[in-house]
Image (cartoon, rainbow, N blue to C red; front, side, top):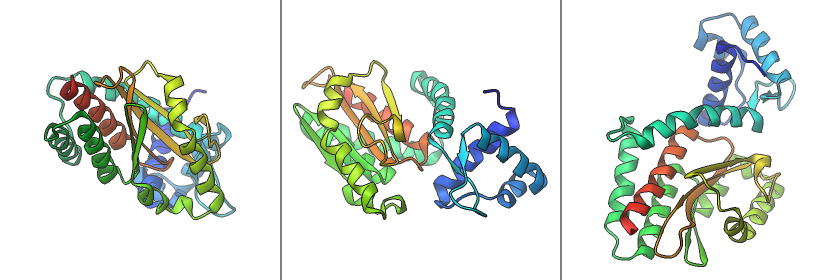
Length: 245
C-alpha cells in the first residue's frame, strides 16, 4: 500500500478529528482544513476507503478510521515515541509535561511498590479517561471502569459484554504474552480476547520487586488520543522501573 503524503495527512486528520469529536468526519471539514475543494477530499477519501483505512458508518455520513487505519497511524507515532523516550531532556507539549509531572509525583511519593503501582494506574485513569490496569504480584489492579463505559462507544450492551470478556481473561493472557518491547498496542481485532469490543489496549512492561514482567497500561476505545496516551503509558512504565529498582 503506497499512500501519498496528502492521503496520509488526510487519514491522520480524520483520526485526530474523530478522537476529539466522536462523530464521523466529513469532506467539508477536511476541505477547510487542507484548503482544497470538497471534491478533492472526497476523491482522496474514496482511495483511503478502498485501502481499508477508513469506513463510512452509514449513507451520507462522514468517515471513521478502521483498525487498519489506526494501526498505520500508531506505527507512524512509534518512531517519534522512541526518540522521545531516549532523549535526555525531551520537549513535550505543556499538557503532556503536566501529565508526566503528575505521574512522577504520584509514583515517587509512595512508600511501597504496591502503592506506587496503584498510584500510577490511578493517574493514568485521571489523565486519559480510560480504564487503567497494572500488575501487582499475582494480581491485576483495575481502576476507572466507569470512565471507560461512559464513552459513547459503549452504549450497546454487546460492546460492554465484549470488554468484560477481555478483562476476565486479561491477567492470564498478560502472563503468557510477555511482550519484548517496552510499549505494546493492540487495536480492536488485534486484541487476543474480546475482538469485537472496539477497544485498544496500550501496555508498558517494567521490572518491579514483584516480577521482571510487570505491566501497566490503559484500555480505552479505539477512538482516542494515541499520541498522548502512548507517551503517558511509556513514561509510567519507565518511572516505575526507575523508582522501584
